[in-house]
Length: 109
Image (cartoon, rainbow, N blue to C red; front, side, top):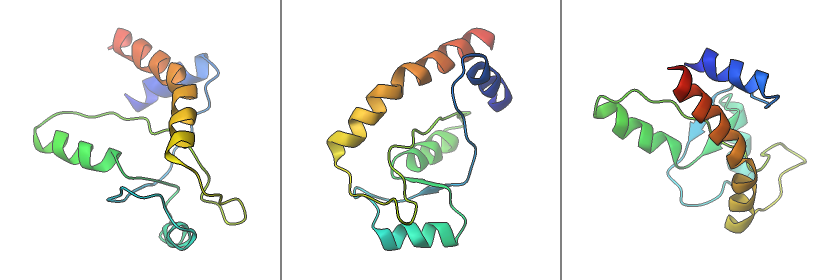
């Protein structure tokens, strides 16, 4: 399914990056120290919602596929404090791209 999603993204000129996702319990944004730690353990992206949902879905026997949206950079020298509203704005701006990938993916299955 990942390969199909990547083909769809490429066909539609949507940037896709693979990496190691670090899940946290939230509901807080990461501190600069936490970002440094996540980089130390070779994490590429961090979030607080995807992992618990995937654990529950797998426990229920469901197959899962998710596409996280990166809303801010935890890169040393580029770390800025973001608000919940800013994260929502970024998510909403790329939601049509995710919807396009998911719609085409479902049609191809």
